[in-house]
Length: 428
Image (cartoon, rainbow, N blue to C red):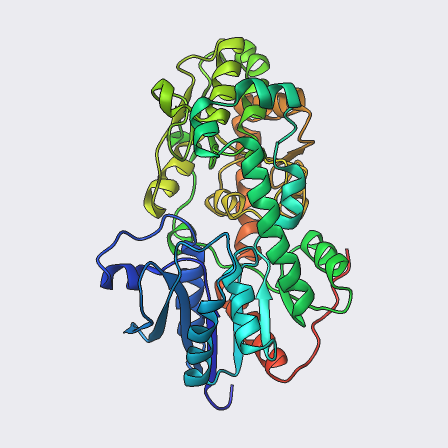
């Protein structure tokens, strides 16, 4: 790369270096962005990186850590409402940095739109992580209206946090997202699903395909059938209906007939065992299914997990299930595959680009819980099959998430965006 390239990243989390400086815990989400930043700097010394994020403070802060300049903009608690007062801070950062490229990570929160409105869309590319404007259609995860109404908790009614409020919130974030995508000239994605949906919103947008770098330690470990907890299922999220944990519970009666010792482990806060006044609506629904299918003691919530904790839970599992009603390119599935955990995923959104059925994992239709059950049983009953899927998934993920190649792709995209060139059209 010739001269130095000045790149602004606008992100929706605080990176670990910043959290350490502010004496606060690091986030348990978004670690892949920090890994990507480190890999980009490691492989391309011509990049000068400036990371901009909102924080819970009253003034603009500037920090230097490990070769990255951080700008912290007031507004951490303004994720649902557009804040025009933040525009002056973004403009100040933009004028100080004078970037060659702006890379906006994510679309759903108003700060992305605030930045573009303040600084313009020139030389700006937006990364598509998920698309909440589309996800909102699948928010209820196939639950029927009577199920939504009958399991709504008093706590959620009093706090205005019902299923319906959650749907409304996601839909509103989708409005910000759609406006952003319609407003910019360049997006960066990974699947035909996000390509198709971006083009539907803005037919003139230039699409650039780029892979995603996963959290660093996941490249260094591999699953071992001899060490896993037999007949265990790991699910990475279970707090929202669209993540589909209830579908795994519905599959359990069929699984338990063949493997009665099967247990489910779920990363995230325990929404099952709360005092009455703290009940969550979705927790009520899960408890109803647990009682209906005799699953008491079979479902274990593990609490929030950091990178090392998540990695170990993947490695302990006999099978990883991604049962969502919608996904783009779930990092959880990528992490499970790169470790070599046998995977089963719902055939939704972009997941079909992660799995070649029967070779690098198994796919099933989201609604077909009996099929999900049989896919899991096939893995449980055959070590040979489990190890075949493990090897196939790991090989596919190592290629798909190759760090050096992706860092190179990212720089090539930056050079195109800086020169105003179009991306390559992706074909399905």
